[in-house]
Length: 375
Image 1 (tube, rainbow, N blue to C red):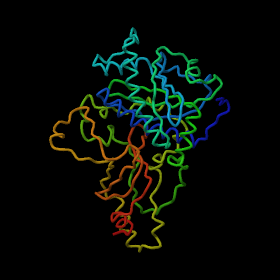
Image 2: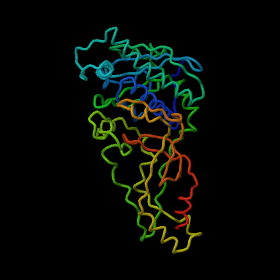
Image 3: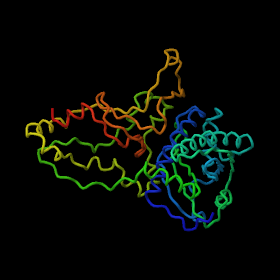
Image 4: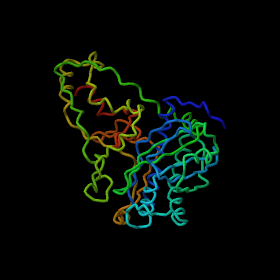
């Protein structure tokens, strides 16, 4: 297939990025169980370029992994890792010292073991992508290619050097061992299929709304302070040396930011004043004054991703690395709960190395009605 002039709209690249992010959350869980450690795959950035123009010098020396898939869609994809990262993943898998050495050799055993790690990871990835696009895709073969070169990309994918490709760069963190990145390369026809089927699910965020003036006496909560140093969702294990959540955010991920992130729905929270103009025709002045006073009242907000039931014996057997399966699918919306009231549903996203939730539905509740009525 010749794709010399293949182009993607910004909305298409955004849908590909968000789909990849969701699928890699599931893939990271699979790798976590295999390596018996915390794995984060976050901050994906998608781009389209000619294969002959693609550069990945910062991942050199590299290890290529060719993925062959079939089913409702057939083709190949490529993943590019730093060789040192691949070595560290193998060391964690085999319980060896977590140190990368320049004399490391990818022999038959290491190639087979690393191939198994990526097979587990990408099998979960394609299962999640299948659900997103409504078309079953199965990983059929994984081939590890050490010391790969740039010209191998088009040969491995059955394309020509002038053809387009879609690259997705993701941050990779494994416990306190790896803080790096890797690149996933998709054929443009497969990337187009993902974009077409998911653009409605992951619409490109609209530009920031204009600032609305508020009365001088309004007391607006200060939302401009930065998040806590550690992940605010973690309330256990934060002091354990091996916990991923004990790591402070690393600025390295900022090097991969693209203009696509400039309109994140979270960017303008600290700049957008609160306005009650929509209530002015229905509330008395006393009610408006009461509502202003409520703005500084702290509320407890929590995110529920799912639940399950376990016997006491099962809970007592929990240990580091235990996987607890919940009753919600990986792509199901999460619940936004305030003071015990369900007020919204949304999708989990990642913003600057922190989990966040993009609200997709507002739920009517007694709490919302009370606040709106200024009671």
